[in-house]
Image (cartoon, one colour):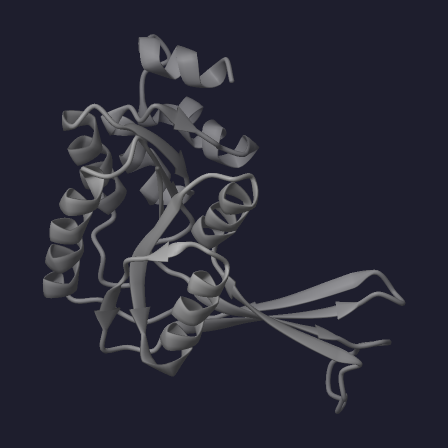
Length: 210
């Protein structure tokens, strides 16, 4: 069983607009709305490949309800913590005629310490059911920067493999707990080389060999 963690999911809306420019009114040729966020993308692909997947994280409001419904339709088990805020919406205006893409990414709702505590309780329960965990994307406002590190530590104590895909402080804090695998881009691994850790650290040598 795979546990896919998406702490800051989104409703992803893609609008198809020809000759898109700023300051005009457009009527899209088409619009698609999907349950988004990196972690849910991971869950979707794993499910399509025949794996059993549980999706977890925070969801709120009518947008969150739509995402949960979509997740369940895809055959993914939904185990989210409900919060008071409204789950974010992210918009992508695609101009295929001119091969451009314009994204507007909402920051998402703010979570409380109680929300985070509730998630950790759920997470500990879900750990008993999975062998591999993935955590992808950003954290919502209000979550501590080392929240992923806390999840990695809890998973490690249970002997579970944790795969981390994030950036910025979430990444540099997360790798302090030495997850089983990471998926950094060039900028993220450069932040490690630039002084977060000593290059003599055996784990960093392993990371840089990926």
